[in-house]
Image (cartoon, rainbow, N blue to C red; front, side, top):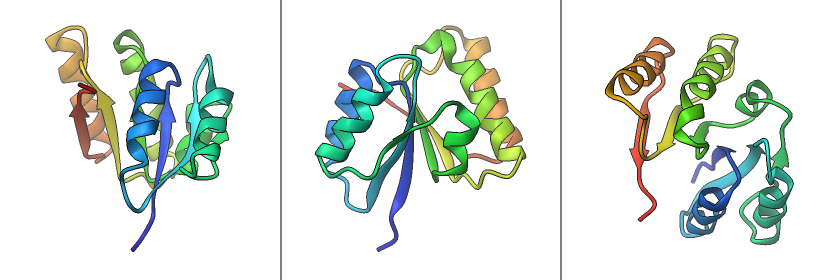
Length: 132
């Protein structure tokens, strides 16, 4: 089975919650995290729980170079900027297979449409889910 390399953006409560859930998914490795706060804590958690050799990355572009899928667990007010950075990384050569966004996708319908358009622009499939 091929391993899917997952990168996390955001490392607060939801990031820890999702990392715990990832232990149940075969063939998934948490390879990196980018976050303004708590990134080291999530990386250590991933390593201690055999979720992968998780590294802390200094920016979104570097994270995207080293994973297959990026999961955005940052607050919804930050998502457009983060997805723009993911799209820029894909256009610059990061070989991403897709983006996962935690709910809610956006604060408004207009923001949601912009996020979808950005993902389509880079030909990146997207998935949206909730943690409850």
